[in-house]
Length: 112
Image 1 (cartoon, rainbow, N blue to C red):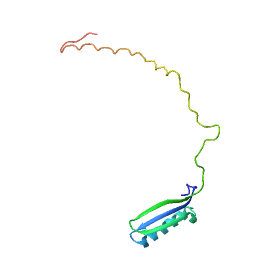
Image 2: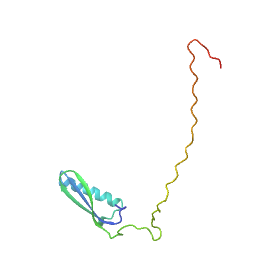
Image 3: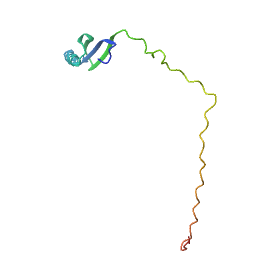
């Protein structure tokens, strides 16, 4: 929450099977966020009875820049299209693999 400086107000919705349990959990979350440095005026807690869930919602944002823009003079400019395609890489001729000598028939020796 501290990493989102443009958010001025967070709403935390906590529900549990019993309303008292939801209130306890909401108190624990509130205390934890305050111990981590989140100002209490930026937190609003809503509790209800129902399925056990916790949700966080941004309810108020500060005015900020509409979009991030590059500083003047450092914008990206597209490359000019090239007139000819780049040359193909030269292929290296491969020498033929040596042919193995024919195998000698069984029982005969070959002289080399």
